[in-house]
Amino acid sequence: MAYRHIVLFSFKPDVTEKQLQEATDVLRTMKDIPGVTSIEIGRQIQPARDNGKTRYLLVEVMTFKDRESLEGHKTHPIHTKVGAYMRAAANTWTDPFDYEI
Image (cartoon, rainbow, N blue to C red; front, side):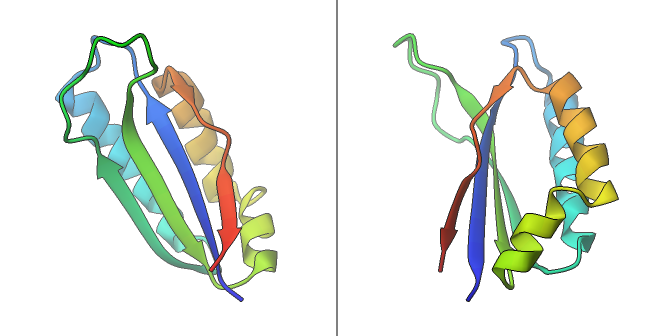
């Protein structure tokens, strides 16, 4: 059975296009983790609303071939490196949403 993994990222209001592109490129390196069958990094296209909610600008959607791959990616060196980068670059992020597909 395959699994999907989704995380949304927010950034400080003064984030630049260059910084968002760099974060996108860094997230895409996770395609090289064993068991990843697809990865999509999407940018928010809707304008910001003044409603007091957190504004998420990037979404990471990964598909894994099986549960073992999903669990194993958490300790893979690429994920560790990406995680360190995103902790410094992003303002906040959601807990991962993982489900069977």
